[in-house]
Image 1 (tube, rainbow, N blue to C red):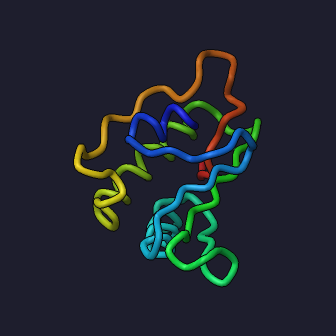
Image 2: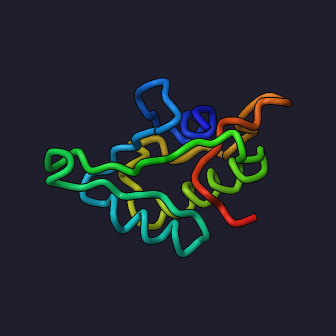
Length: 114
């Protein structure tokens, strides 16, 4: 999943199975748009986090397949392009590529529909 995010020019700090992706005020519209594409990602906002640091909470699971991870990456890329293009900075998104080497399907996104 980290490779997918990095391929999009995004980063999520930490080494845990929960990846926080800071999007600021666009967090909830992005979360709603991803849900419409079949991916549930919690949007965390103030007062849970300080204003301006709102984020998506991407939960990883060993149950997510490489295909699900890549599908989430494509959905995230499309959603951010439409709802929050500023999330990419000036370079724009890169194509999403394979998230994990063969046999490492443990890094997943969020309960995507098969």
